[in-house]
Image (cartoon, rainbow, N blue to C red; front, top):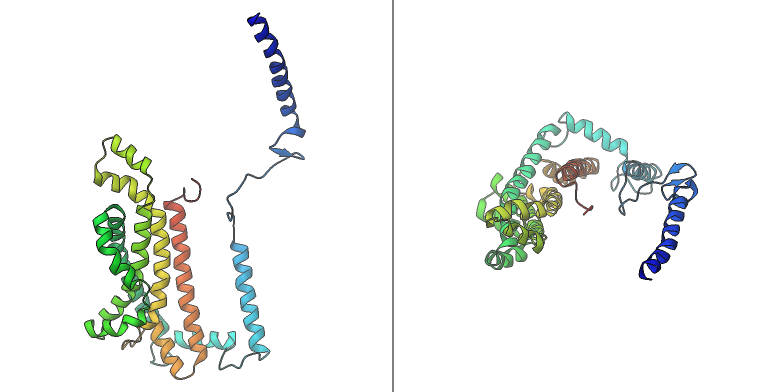
Length: 301
């Protein structure tokens, strides 16, 4: 009786399975095809190319700028025309603006200050952030001063930095360094805390030492957050550049902008702002490409 009941119960199931296989083999019921074409794979929200949208956004802003200036919505003293800004760029390349220095020297000095301070902040803030993430003692000791100075604007402690380090290049580097240090350290600390307990316990169960766990478990888990912190920090570095070059600078994009504003050269001011934004944007694009190469799993696990 039991065997017959089992065979009786399994017969409809077998028939249903066969019917399901027959129905799934038909093109009309296939979930992978629609009218003879494959259905596009599912994507994460926000995933996909954005180059065309970015070009359209920049073109729209440029068109709005051109219309606003040529229709005299704003006087040229407040917003110069794109042609005037381009002429200022050509003059700056040949050293025909205030100071007589070519634009290449201004770019070189600003890049040296920003990227030098950024590199110094990277090699010091990442270990500090990782240490704060894996050590309760380090987090308790370093968190108060870091959280205290992090929200302070650079102009607030710029006079103190000048008193301590003078008016030479050291003061400029220190101001930009402090602006970059905090976001990198905070990102590294948050990334170190993102390693799961299961990963750490699995590493310990395989005989891993603390240094090996930090190197092979904590650092890979923290890398996405660290790269994001680097992108934020370089933006803060360029933001602080103008404030840093207020300190007795004779060359630099920030100094060029400040000097031009004293003579109401709005075209030079806008040209300097556009250059700073373009340089920071290009560096950010490079950081995005590096992020896609180093952490391809980000947003997919």
